[in-house]
Image (cartoon, rainbow, N blue to C red; front, side):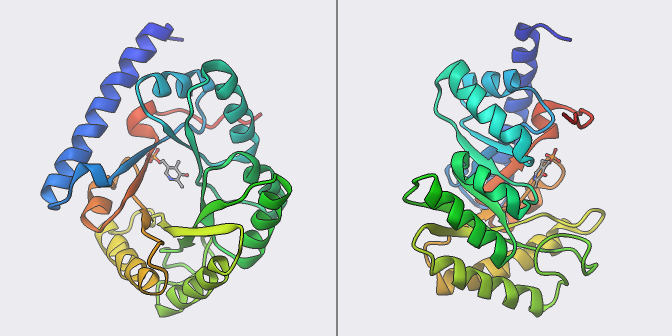
Length: 246
Ligand SMILES: *Cc1c(COP(=O)(O)O)cnc(C)c1O
């Protein structure tokens, strides 16, 4: 275990390196850094790391499991009082949606109508006026291998746009954009190029749906080339760590 001072220094270095990759990636793509939101993915890491990141000015944090996220969001608020935005980025079971709707500021992984319905119900029960969500496009070439409308073809895009229409019709959910994960071992430029086309189609029918959540530690430059507005960075910021199961 490193001391909090060592860990803070490590996170500060990693953050500087990631910010510099974002700056260079934006410059190469002719984009402005100010367009990009960096989400630090704190999954598998303790709330103390989330607090240090908040101290370093990272105010967007991502989690992929409700069990961890619900605890950390409450603990961090108690620890620091710093207002951070919580991004729920993982595959979400319908029976966890009510919990997520209590603390999430943006749910990235809405991949089916049943989940949208459950989040809407949860947001209402939590007394929220609105809950921002993204629809998740599956970029996985193997049907059924991942969440979201399967298959790379037009079918997945059409299905996603239908889901988006239904989300947009909700009086509680706010359709804020689109999210995708590049398939493991595939070409991220091809995957994110396809995402950019679908994001464009989404904006044609829903002009306010401007968020494009794409890019992780390995492929953030490719995501920036294809219009990502939100990058989700875990390993490059926090290091490698085995999943800890409670
Ligand atoms: C874990 C995770 C990330 C972060 O991935 P790294 O490769 O560690 O940067 C981003 N997005 C999702 C959906 C994740 O589950």
